[in-house]
Image (tube, rainbow, N blue to C red):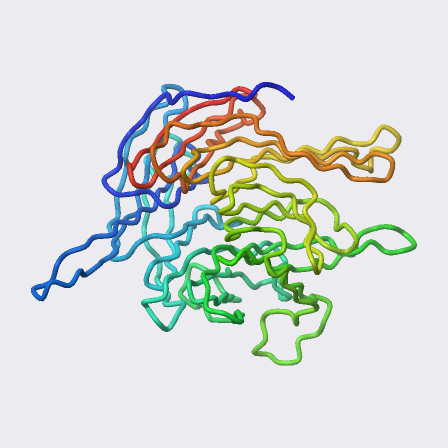
Length: 415
């Protein structure tokens, strides 16, 4: 184990509103979007306190050489922005989840072939995804390729503060407002569902040939404020009987009843490793300040655990390294995952998660590589610059934020 790095900021700027989420633009890699959330209070004539939530979407440019920041565009919105994510395939599109139970789709326009052109953000549509606008949409996850049974389908899952998770989709162009609700998953108790992750696994290997099944197995994982992690597995091999059905039937569903997380589950990152005993392996973040390698079996099992000094609000996978086995290159002897963690009151962490296969056993480990601690309040959002062809270099260039002090910091770590 090497010593933990403690980087200093190269640049700090202060926003006009508290930053709640942040993501770099894949099609314009020197640019990122920040979502903000401003809670305002005013007294009414009869002495009651009225609260209102507003926000903005802000397009910022990072100069990767000088490490400076400049704001390019700001769009005010009449609600707080809780979450934002770029589409995994149409990479100039991103969607946001709002405090009024809506999802909006935006496009980042870039001039093709002109690297010097300034991108701009335009809104394509807004959809009310909860019938009650007082129920906020907390998190949004795009469906990966082949998550839906029909190849043309595209969509997302969204979670709410009243325990609901819903899936929305279209078989047309996602940029047109033809989104419909395709499935709703209610929980037993009224509680915030902080996170949803959608993933596909290659399926179980054929017993004779040991080749993975060609049909993707879709999973949905949710984490709630009680500390429960809920796993749903769908069957993409099943025929859909009803033309109105768009999500495969559920094969299994189980909730670990908060056996392993002692507070709310706030981040879930499915890891790209083969199923272990027919169950996936995840990385989880929790309010209890720990990151865990979690085996999503019926009862659940923690394979490794590491305290990060603050509530682990978000986890972002930066890269995956597969080291082939010496005897046969088709076997992987070690997986390495580089992960950026936004840790609320503790700042940002760069973490390496490893899985070594030795003597038929898998040994998981978690190592903290760097701690950035200049934030003076909740670090809810961080991102990493992935510029051009230079991603093989050892420097990791980060932008991280903190909420109440409205701070945006640029810093680097040399791995």
